[in-house]
Image (cartoon, rainbow, N blue to C red; front, side, top):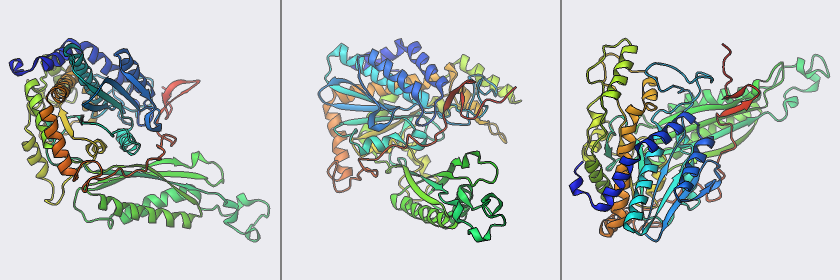
Length: 529
């Protein structure tokens, strides 16, 4: 790090993180071990709120009608700068922080765990904000820092809600951070931001099964259980699944790297005997680079659901889960952020981390490498080089790629997308590392902490730049106004896709931990030994 080129305000922010590494690492361990999933991050959100209050922030919990969302504010006056924490884990990825396959104790083996660790994402943003706050106190800087708690990113849940309800109004700039992966390592995005993600749940309810067969056709009048059972809710959800698999082929051309996935949320509640299952529910989520493509997929799904309900004599109800826009770029704030990443330098993984990497390789019956980690996870990648690598696999007309709901921020103030990388194992020809290796390293301090510290310093330094250099902030905002055709409400601006009175889908049957006489466990009971 070239400290001679860093202002005293920025040095204060960076030094605060260096001096607070144990505190930051300990908090990350707390969130990582909670491993709570979308819309059910109760302990994680509380931990953030408690810590932020201790740090002097004004904290509002349950923002937007979402119990595990929050908004923490510190300071006053302009500029108003924001970032956010995510903290949701992923079902089916349970793993202890050890160099071998080991689901967490006392839970079902397919309980959740952190993958592209949102635990680290949130703690890095938190560290950056606290570092900037320290610089503001020490150097008497004016401005306002806001940290959002954003639950359910894995279903792109909270940010479209916050946007629709006006929480992102009145900001001067945002910083979005995510752990690095694939081609996005130790860099910032340039032109190709993330695309759109929509999700909906279709519920089928068997309301009048007794009307399926006329009384005169019953072999044993007065005993309808002896008659042919009506198709009911499980038939409906299975038919919806199958019909959509057939029609998926005709939804859109095979270009643009769009995708469609499903998750059966309810399937009859284990109805027994000859009783017709009364309720089923299937969630669809789809991502594509344009809003017209999203709408085309939506129309096919809604048509399928309508006809499936008619065939199975079920009542259909539709519940939107989310709708995101596509991302809007801003070169000016990307340049500021990348220069700070250059000043901080890439994460480095020392001998302690290398021992972990070698042990993982040994446990997979591979020859342990002297240098087990890739060069890419420990070097910087200039934004334009990142852009060129991303564009290699995309058609020329495609302007956005993959999905993440940070895109909602980009339409309300200039926003940068920053990436730093945790330790990444070097590839072995003909061998694919299993997912548990990545999940494990996201919880081992030596293989994940450098990623968090690098990101926190970069975020803190960028916030300080925006607080202390009004000419840079003006340039950033000028570009935003040009790209939106006049700012919010401008000729090229895209409004939130959800209505302002949208009810967040927190009441749906999302996977979660439960407490019974058996103790706390995943919603799938812990197997008996």
